[in-house]
Length: 189
Image (cartoon, rainbow, N blue to C red; front, top):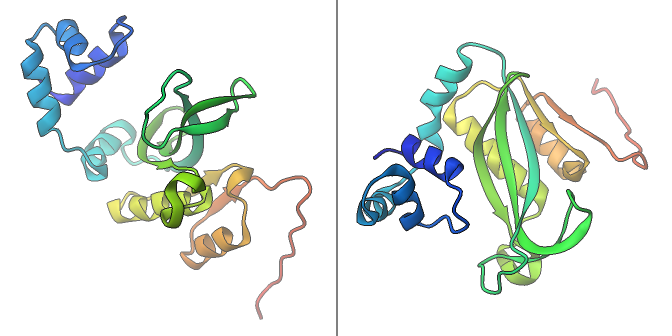
C-alpha cells in the first residue's frame, strides 16, 4: 500500500465513516495493514517537491493562499474546533479553519502547505492571525526551493505588517485590498 492508493480510496469510498476499516475495504486489504501504514506515514512538505516538478515542469507558478472551513457541526470534542462563519453557506457552524497554500500554473492547482487556524480563546498565548499563518506557509515554501513568480491572497491577508514582511523578502505579491482601504505609496530616493 502507498499514499496514492490510500488517497484514491479516501476519495472514492462511499462510506460515511472514513476510518481505517472503511479504507481497507475500499482498497481490498486487511484493516491492520491500513492501520500500520497510517502509523508509519510521515509526510511533510518536501515530499511534494517531486510531484510539483512532475506536474508543472518548468512553468511559472503562483502560490495561492486562502482559508476554508471544514464543518464539524455535530462534533463535540474535535481539537481546535470552534464556532465560525462558513463562507460557502454564510452561516455559523462548528468547525475547523484551514489556511492552505497551493501552487498553480493557471490551469492546475496543487495544495502544498497548510496550517490550522485556532481561535484565540482556545490557542491562548500561541494564537496566530491568518496573516501570521500565511507568513509561516510562505517561509515553508521558500525553504522548499520551489520558484514562485507571485504570491496571491485575498483581502483577509491585507495588513501593513504582512505587506512589509513580503516586501522585505523581495517577493512579488498580489493581495486584494478592501474597498475602504487607502494605500499610500512612496518611492524611496
